[in-house]
Length: 581
Ligand SMILES: O=C(O)CCC(=O)C(=O)O
Ligand SMILES: [Fe+2]
Image (cartoon, rainbow, N blue to C red; front, side):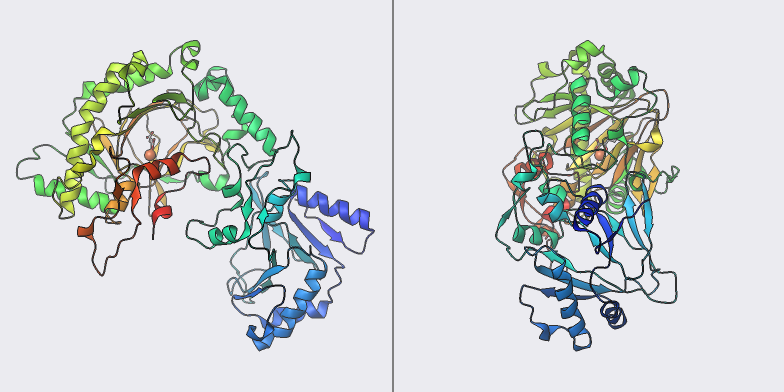
């Protein structure tokens, strides 16, 4: 890939156009003839060790900088600021040896080619990166580029010195410059206060992802491929307006998947471990009122602690009821397009909605190869007549059969922690939640996309019914493990809410679904159990806390939790981190 090197001694119009082009296309430039003498650059690299971070305001107080490199750092600031935008005059300088074995190579992500590109050091050159704030100010005219550094395989250590220029006006309001916006190109970001930006940057909420996406307005989807954001948004809208979901694309005979479905290669990681009964426990619930009860409690507690996921067999629900439910949901998705598309909507006010990708417009990476029918239950929201007739009786029956099972399982989970089995009964969790009927049609390029991307469930408990096709995977010790469907079994996931209430004694299990490579479509029906009382305050149960085990989560209300889950700027990360103390 072309990494532009700009000679700053060239004529100004040429320098301006080269820099503008590089900022637009790559967000990354090397500059030579920048006016900083080589000796000044060399002095620094001999002096810094590990990571030294120096914060500087407009008037640095150099006495705090270690004497061994004080003059060199202050000198470098003076030199750099001559070539920088004066308004951005607060800086942080980390000088780092990333690892004693770091090859002197920088790598820049080229998402368009889905690879990392080596940035070879050029003698005497400095590297200029467009930062996220400049991208926001320029309303995406300029791009900040993703980059990383490999571990150093050489004996000789590598040193780098980065100066980050930020504004000192911490309380000023920033946003895309008005000159950069127009009716055709509206502002893509919300206004932000720099102190808020910094606060977020240093909180646990940010897991290294770009803050740009936090400030980006819902409708403005970032681009991960070689598309302009407007093209991507147009493509998402066009897909949504078809109202026929992914199945509609397959029925139209496409042989390659549209760009919006293509995931970055690092999230696809196709290598997976085959089904292993030691990793995926199957718990037999038969004779649960006899001698076997303590053993069942034990197995459920262990699986919830170690995996956040297990299968249950002999759960009391007849296999015909399971089959009918799958068949009815599949039948809905296979209704003639004219009928089904009338029900397509993603309005939050509806109890029943059919759509493809609940997060279609907030997804910052790529969307998935799946359609869904979502039915909200509880708080008197669901009138049975709203459920499509083709699956109404089956869905209502399914939910009523599952409620006692959910109560039973949560009772076991409580017992496994030494709590009364009725401890969570007052939450009335079995009466509120969502029933979702997923449909994963054949995907012509299953290696480029996912059926459902990696997540934990934002529920208390999820009970999943799936057909025989397979594709569900759980994450175990960093590997994706195939969950082979076990005939007659139901899959159970510990959800985030239970993890918080049980103060991390049990874990919500990370899982995903690969895109369906077979001609036969896959159907699954997860039921997510929440709690009926939306405004009560929940948090880690006091009985589970002690001096050695303090509360790991703040108190929360379900209404707040659900609002955040469906918020426009929620990017699909676990909400656990948000509530974690
Ligand atoms: O379809 C599946 O197997 C999994 C569905 C799921 O994980 C979800 O909807 O949260
Ligand atoms: Fe899930």
